Structures are given as structure tokens and as C-alpha cells.
Image (cartoon, rainbow, N blue to C red):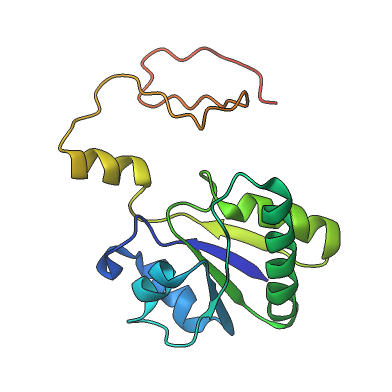
Length: 162
């Protein structure tokens, strides 16, 4: 089993959730996407495997790295509990979604799930910037793909679920 654990905005190991700490400590193997994540979980785990997930526009390079990392993660996830600590939220602009696509294709026997962080990048940003989010906000990576999330809706429209 592979569990992606959101370890929140980088920098403060005291902001990890109790659930995150328990999973990190209980895991047979822990993986992190670089040294920042390694430092964040250091109080709870001394032996994580550091993987490289490059920040680049070269999609072929990214794909090769994700496939290589999936091959490193797969044995531990097949044998026991593997935890992949993600900076931020595993389901929000994360590497985890792309990793899952590879797992589905190459290692369909591996089950996976995600645990969100206690502090999201959106709320951490607003707090660090000293701004209050009272109105609508738009978050985009500039691509054509969009998703709408509505919070505190007073009169929601009834729409069929896709």
C-alpha cells in the first residue's frame, strides 16, 4: 500500500498532523521528493529515501523521472506500508497524481490513497501574506484544464455529479 501524506507548506515540522506523524513512523519505507521534505520529517523519521522530481518544462524528462521513481517505490508498496511525503497537498498540483497514473499502468496491483496536510498551501499563503480571503479567488497553472471548487456557498445550484 502506498499512502501519500501531505506535509503542508515547507518549513515547520510542528505543523504536521498527528495522522501524518503516525503514518511516517509506522511506515516500512518512507519516500520524500527532495531534501526540504526530508528535513521536515527528520524529527519523526531518519531513513527516508530521497527521490528526484524535477521542476522543468521538459515533459519527457519528467515522465522518465516519475517512471524511475515508481519503480523504486513499487517494491515497498507491494510488500508493506510505503509513505510518500508530499510538500503541500497530494491532490493539489502534486506529483502524486502523475505518479498514480504510472502506478495504474505499470503496477496495477498497488493500492494507494492520499492524506491531506493540516495546513493547505492556500491558507498558508494567505496567512504569510497577511491577507484575508473573503471573496472569490482563482487558482490556475495557466493551462486550459480547470476545476471549480465552491466554498461557503449560500444558495448552491444543484448539478449532477460527473
